[in-house]
Length: 485
Image (cartoon, rainbow, N blue to C red; front, side, top):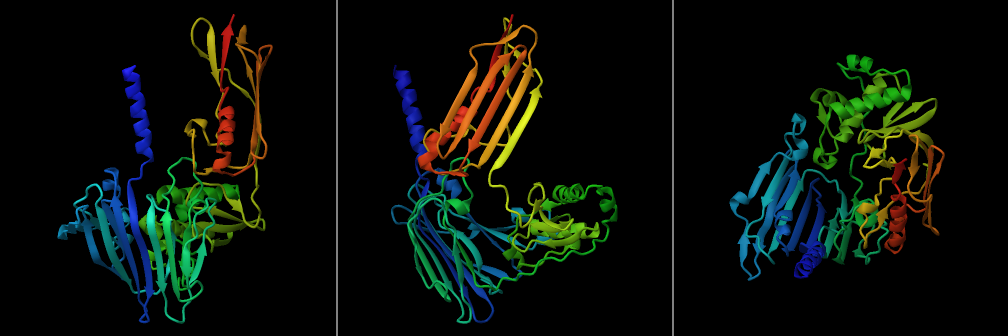
């Protein structure tokens, strides 16, 4: 009995620890100042208190990316404030310059630097204070700032000061989760200030919607960012590759070109701001064997143009996509993944509909004494698994509207009979979805029908329990047991 109680106590303690926060931001502040001399300054300040030892690794280092060609970094203040009030300043060796991981193995980007700031004297209830400024030979303000962070935030500030002739454009995401509205001043002017307080931490659950659907994201722009995109050009040295990748089917040909660029050119994760929003040079990308997804899109566009495709251009809304025209229809293809080309200006199907009918090969696993287990294949078109859905959840679930029907038949060995009664499982939740599973034997054939309908693409917490029950029903009866006479 004592062992059982101890085990239960450990489990309860583990659950309590899992929910505890690691740290607490006292302050996060982003300040953008555009100067009259054509330069700008970005100032960042954070004050974060460490509450658990896991926070020592999460917050023990700060990384500042910059391009020395037009940027410089100054540490204004950096220290650790201990619980007893002792202030421990950053030692000289706490600042380490290094090549960012996103620039590795790409000589064109070897000039970019990452300043690693190693915070010292970390202990429980210590507060890390860091304040730095990046001075830029550029007037561009172009930023996306997420208010919610990996730990709660007491106060989050955004301050923007522009010359009189400039106006700040601000937009906000519309998350499905409701948060207290921040205080905003100067919207639509050259002086803007946002203050948000008592922000909760971000979610850590599986199957989460994208950040713009979950959190408050503030997008800032003063309209100074260059909007030029790469124009397809002829690549010297590409003739042999183009000949090798040629396909009779135009779409297959384009997919082959995209996959070649994806598979043979290293992807470097560098923000366009660090490159001063330079237009990618396809020939340089070809010669170097590496580049950002924007770079690789420029290369793909040039290869497609050189292969004879029409209307090839970079998508102005997404520089990682290449637009092309076949039979008068515009399509786009992405270099960020290996997805299929999609038609432009055509609304995507709101509900994914799948109907499949096929005969499954008998591959029952023999257990013992003439018993067998037959496992149904998983329908990979629906990725959510019941095993990954916790019993209690406060975060929304990213699902998808879908209507799927699978009819399977299995020819059984002679004398093999399904154990138990026929299966007829039906679970329906009004406005949310339905699951229907039937399994029956007719002579030497098993007949299985599986139907799944989901009517919402985002499942809010109030519907979570019902949704989880639907998915549990969908994942059930995947194993069928039989007995041979």
